[in-house]
Length: 330
Image (cartoon, rainbow, N blue to C red; front, side, top):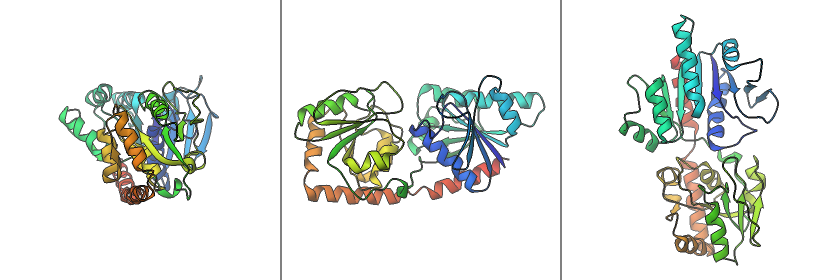
């Protein structure tokens, strides 16, 4: 089969959670023997064409518009997400109106934002893939799963061996220093706990809050978390306003790094019983949990739970189901 993905950004030049999830799904299709290409509409980093882990990537540029690239690919299935999802559906609908071969369309839903629900109601994709059970349930309650659309849950795949490290540092780490992820909270905790070492990783999206505090190390945006972040980290904090899942937490748990998180539905689904949950604005609660885990016995118990949860989240079964469903669409 020929499979195309229409996306605004792509890895490895843009490493946000949605992009890494979609790439893992496309990589599974490539491993299964299918021809897989990604057509990128927005990012300005990297070459116009490249191959990454079995996926050919082509950037739409002047003189080479998206429809022309998709026509040349002749995909059996067209996958998309975020703002490119309606464009993917429009492309397929236009082909059908012209009496031309049209690809089946799969949308990947990463969140419960009103715009995401509006897209599925309007365009009625052949397949809706949700990144969590709770997101699928939200769409169902809001009647945003069109009749006839097939559905599937694929949790953002994390391969533990790709993230595991053998050493732990001393830092309490936050990944992505934008306000919604908890950038302000990191600095407020550092002010409250001058005896503790903190680390903030510059994220790939959203305005970043970067400040100079003596006990906060700023780690620049990196695609090499295993090299640059996890060996320095003892605890991960995720005081997010919204997380539909929380890949950073799952990646950290692959190394037995305990995770303290805000109790969003997505983080609860991702971290399970291994997560320690504190309301976002409860700074005293965050400090108590962090200090509790200074005790070696408490840390070891939490680390063991994190490793167990990492094993439970083995992505192979869900990726196999994804490949099987895509193969059935043609």
